[in-house]
Length: 303
Image (tube, rainbow, N blue to C red):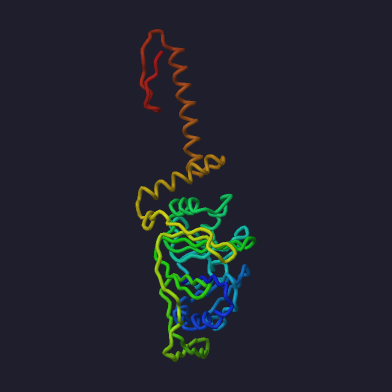
């Protein structure tokens, strides 16, 4: 399962503590073997391979998002990593998006982000709607490069840690004991040697939140609201059928039909044509008034 750590920091003095936190969690992050991506105030970098994990560092950015990936679908390599650019937005999540589980291009995070940013404005209502339609379960972290706004939403638990003028959000419970870490590589095999100092990072608070929508603007909370509880929504078969109907309706409105829909429309036209021809022939040849059953269409024709 992927891991996400998001940092909103307005105090440069926290830089050393945050770096200690990342070092303390290096072993947990290294479990994700398909690489990681990092967003630093709108600039994203992508890394493949275990050796790159030693380069995970924090340099005092106001907005910092780290996503480590274990692939469960989508592209292999950099194309499968999260925080890809979608119309100026970057998105990472921990969890699953059922509607895009079988997609081989990019990843489910990319496609869900494209659905979100198709709306004129990102709001709590828009996010709740797309969560239901696409079967999103987990924690989502959305960043807009132009405005610097960050949106955090979830329908499963997010761990929150507070420092002075700094909030840290994590998809899992972080290791908070300060450690010294040495990374050794032999023939491509990476080993991490840890030694504990016995000191803990002095957080002001630690909390777990669920079903929340938080909107940060310029590093400060602009909105913080409860979301409708939607965890497990997609597991309901009726909701899966509703999603298929929604997509079919959407494609029909846009004037696009699937191969199956085109075939059905064509057969309907043929049947209507046959039915009219049969009725016309019966009226022409019959002298008496009555009705006849048409085997092809399953209807009676009156004449």
